[in-house]
Image (cartoon, rainbow, N blue to C red; front, side):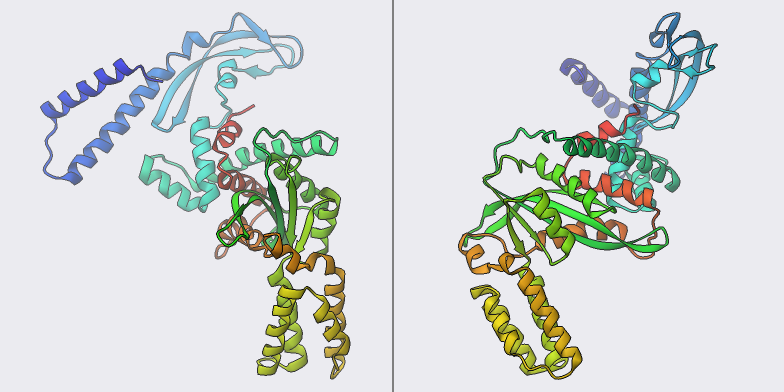
Length: 430
């Protein structure tokens, strides 16, 4: 953005100034001086550059259109402060007022993506990105120490609420388009194999624990042993009904090329909502119940039937987990049909385990899945719950309101997806 010649002249002038006027005795002093000068110079550059657009240049004529359909008349110029990445600057803008509906407006503010808050879109985008990664207090501390940006914890929270709500609004609009039958835009190469995985975790919201659903979409990349590993991931997460989340996840899958993929694979645990969504949104996909989740059912049954810590029970569970991997669920179902239960609790556990494996029998054809090089574990989905939700919303003592949690989830997914341009776009007022 800065002409090369101008930058060269500036730097040469700075070198001469340093040689003539600056004296330091250590590297630490040199860094401190450089930091002080860069902050002061940055503020001057930002202020003078902004002044090339405000003042009389913000005048849009004697009148402008008003929302009421009539005209707002030019009144004069009004001052305001702007908190930029380089410091606070003062600007003057043309102000218009409608005598009919009594609304005031400042076209320059609208054109710059500003609203009534102090901060510029670049500042808000940076704060939103940082707060998606760190608690609000840490966000304010880090920005103050690194950029000398003075920001209260409550201000960071307000910025997240503003930017996060716009991000959610755009997502909701796209979800509405999908429900109306429109295709999700995708311009990349068609994936050979695309995985869609989902899971749930609990967060303390509005005074109680609620499930937050998280989804991750990724391409399968053939590993050195011929079995897929996960490629680049796209995350989405929200506290909402399964039906609504299914549409949200389908948007993320569409943005990853699900409609063009040669093969789609859905992985999840045994939760009913997962497979209802899979059947609805990805009817022709290969569907796989997480192998390790299935093994956990086998170990839980062994504890009930053999007793906690039983060596025989552990041996029985390990053997049937191996058989499940190598032969599918039929050997286990046959073993359960012959199992002699001792007591009502064991009998019920056997019935429930048998029902679980019968219901998911087709989704547990692990020998065939492994032959095709498919992943049979939902590790990426469990990791997504930790990375998206746990590391930000479930730190010690954290309690959330629905709106705050939703804004953080929206922004954290954008950050993890590397969608920084979108964050900057949402930081600009409409």
